[in-house]
Amino acid sequence: MIGSEIDLTEFQKALDLAATYSSRTTSEVINSACLDVIIRASREIPKADRSKMEKQLIDRIEVTTMSKSGKLLKHPKTTRHPSRLVYNIINARRRMAHLPPLVGEDMAKAAKKFMQARIRSIGYIAYAGFEKANRAFGGRGFRGSVNERSKAAQGYGRKAEQGSLWAEFVNRATEAYKIGGAIVQRIVNEKSREIEAHVEQKLAKQFERL
Image 1 (cartoon, rainbow, N blue to C red):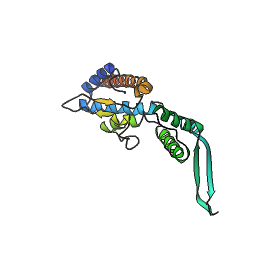
Image 2 (cartoon, rainbow, N blue to C red):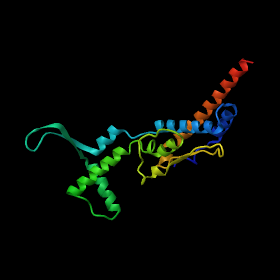
Image 3 (cartoon, rainbow, N blue to C red):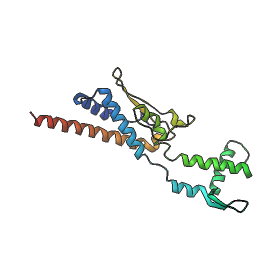
Image 4 (tube, one colour):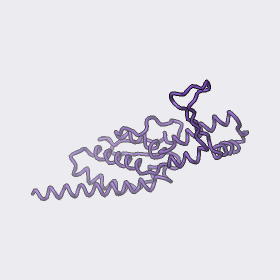
């Protein structure tokens, strides 16, 4: 989980300073800063290397250009055959669950499902994990709907309102803090310094006009 583990002391001080000298409401200042942190974190949290992942998961790629009747296909059919690693992982998981190993067509279906899930998992923490928080703070979101059965779906955001200036964004994707915690902390600290520098620059310009 990414949320309560992050030290927001300097961030809160910077927001208080910005709100004091901003023409925007305090809640607008807070929400804008939080959305910026969410978007930056989503860009910078490491994603799996798709090409490397495919090399591990795929043994060979077969392209079929002719139909069974011998006619040339308008759109060639591409079949990705799983590597031995995929079969081993599936049956290892089944052994741990005290289930019999899969073979034949059952294994083929399970392998295809496994490979599709692994490819979809690219950017899981960065995007799916912050999806609901992004939208809560007025963002457009990253990748459409989130699998509601996943831990990422438990992430959320809470905007600051004029009656309650408490704002919160949480990423509950699996291993979110382990992989992205330090990155989010750095981004929060950077945003704090940017806010303070902006206020100082704004005050300096006002002083020059006196």
